[in-house]
Length: 393
Image (cartoon, rainbow, N blue to C red; front, side, top):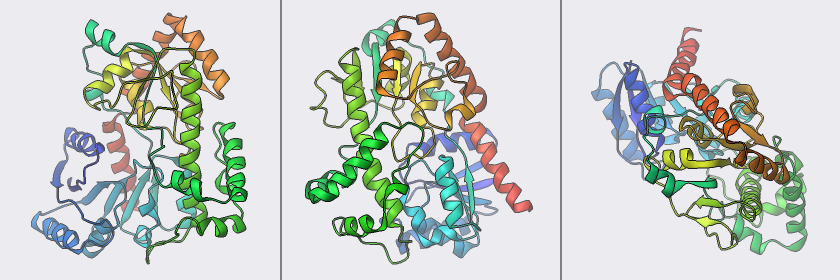
């Protein structure tokens, strides 16, 4: 097939492009950047002209759902496929999301189910994350790499202290609202594998909280205040507190490297290694670390991060916080290790640091599993099969 791939600067674009091409499809990049993802009329006109200039295009594709691309495809009567790598993805609240030509793939099963309930006639699919063997499995790791990146424990990711407006809002909330917030978040921090924050918000709290968020909904967006507050405020704040507490506890006992651009002044025992290049450094970090931590964002309902697949693809040993989708795809304690509390995590780190043979066997099993079942080539085949199946029905 021939497809137009709308690039906007996401690191997943090249990985999907290469997978489509390896499978024999023709990918034509449309590389104009949109000034505004909802109403950029110049972008819309140019995309429509670009599609018209290329004959026999089967569909248009992008990473994340972009409303202006959907508008163009509606005009063209052209299928629009998007795969969400962000969770949450606020553009899914756009009224354009419900149009019949859209085919949207969520990596988080519970998020997919939520939007299927809201838009039962929409083409919504569940398609989990993937790994890129070219970048992560085919690396030669030298003695110098082990000297540079070797450590007991590592984590690569943001502390979420710089994301969204949750920090600013927290500073202005009245004490009675902040107490409500703290109560829900503190309860969620003690529960792994089930996110109950959204269902814990009552209507009176939501209406009061909106006053402090400078609540503004674009004119053609669904006003789902409950979900947005749960994801963009509670989810981000809970993630920040979870990652800080986890890394603080781990680093007080184990040599811990953190690769991040976040402020780490509240983590005195962590080795802040700065930013990690995704193509060169990450495979080496994952392979050379004895234990890789996976601390999924609390904005995820059930899904697994790309980081989990990439660690395993690189042959790294990973201990991940429990997510309900992990046992659906991996055998716990054979392919991957999971933890259900910070004390549980500390005990498991201590155990596997002193049981190297078991650690290496689990890493090898996990790598074999993702290389067989969870590559971008596999995901592209699954994506096309789902869409063609819909076309045929």
